[in-house]
Image 1 (cartoon, rainbow, N blue to C red):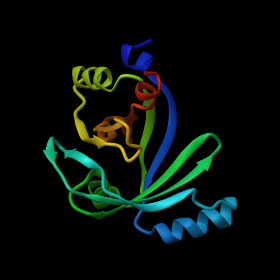
Image 2 (cartoon, one colour; image 1 turned 120 degrees about the vertical axis):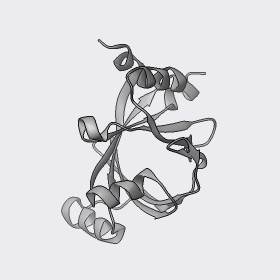
Image 3 (tube, rainbow, N blue to C red; image 1 turned 90 degrees about the vertical axis):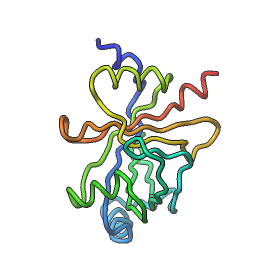
Image 4 (cartoon, helix red, strand yellow; image 1 turned 30 degrees about the vertical axis):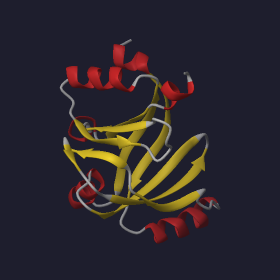
Length: 155
């Protein structure tokens, strides 16, 4: 087992970037009978986009679905990986998020593998929780996101 794999605890979210969140809400209700568990615009603090400070907003809706959170995202403004995705791919699978225990150790492993941090910042979860998106779409077809929930909860 690879050192990076040892640091990843579980997949806890699948992220999909879309243009029309209202259409998604209607279709998730029609197809699965589900309503979103939350819905709103988020502006993360301390965001770095390709290594530079960024101010960007994203409208997000979440669904709890078979122990995995399905996150639909639509960029609101500013430069971001969500806007880049829509410009390049239109709608589709954006990221798979992994729950981790050591944010810095995972970042180091990714850097050693030649994988750049695409965007990172303080999570809207608060309490020192950080997110990072790694630029793996060109190589594996989706972006890897990490969230250090276990690092905070294990302290």
